[in-house]
Length: 377
Image (cartoon, rainbow, N blue to C red; front, top):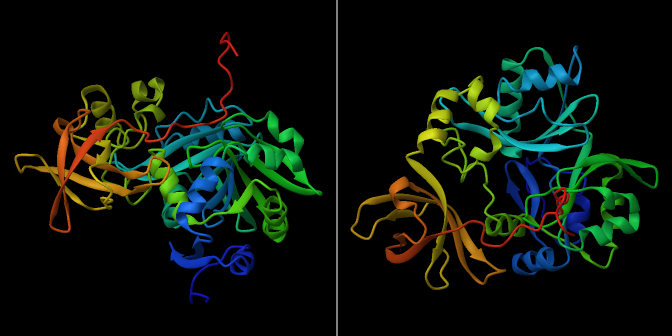
């Protein structure tokens, strides 16, 4: 049944045809599931799943001085290394505010003559307003004429190379131009499930036809937002609004690796004083993995305390991990409560549940990375 007053993607008709259970997600009518979250989660871990992520913002950046100047300007609002990003490659980073908190996390792609950003649906208007205000030298074009599809899973490459053989040349975080039946596509080897896979920027008018061709492949089944969330949680990947927000720094969030040394040394980005200090000296709070005893999931926003009753932070993302068949969670806890093996107590609707600090991710990442030079194959 249609949900009133929501934005829809070019695949809304296909979602309804396939029996997707549609929900309101960040103002968009999107499928939470088709066959079911557990089945779709396992499909993506063992075969390939197709996700509609067209609600995310796709934005092109250009400036009068060309892509080099565009990259230099963009570094004014992010601690990520943009000027060192090579054509045909992507980089994950965050926008930061003056207090060192995270405005959003995003992917930057060097498209040769311009940069392309993919930003979160819930933050797209905030991001664009912020970028336009802070970077008047850049022309920002929001691509509302495209859809964004994510084909994820160990057999995604088998399915996609049947349609586009040359896509096999891509490694993790590579991006290039391709075609299916004369339809131009921008395809990157990336995603947010922890699995190998691809993201496809497709003209909106052709999105349903391309999606149907992908779904015709024997490895591929449609997947919804429910499985996307359980997959990213098992992979230890942050979700904006849960594990990231404008009060949480990149260091607290475990994203210090996104900030290269030259940026830390220069300190020329918003919130640098706090972020560099926390990088060098440690932060007061830390994002950690959490494993609860038993089979009862510990959900988002659950309060944590130490064994002796002191406050010990909060669960930021929590649920059931179908791959490992037990509850999984991430939380933001005081640094003194963050050592591996530390046992905390989660208050689950009045019941005390022991929960242990563990390594992230819960399931190993299986990205198709380029071999390290000199490494044995």
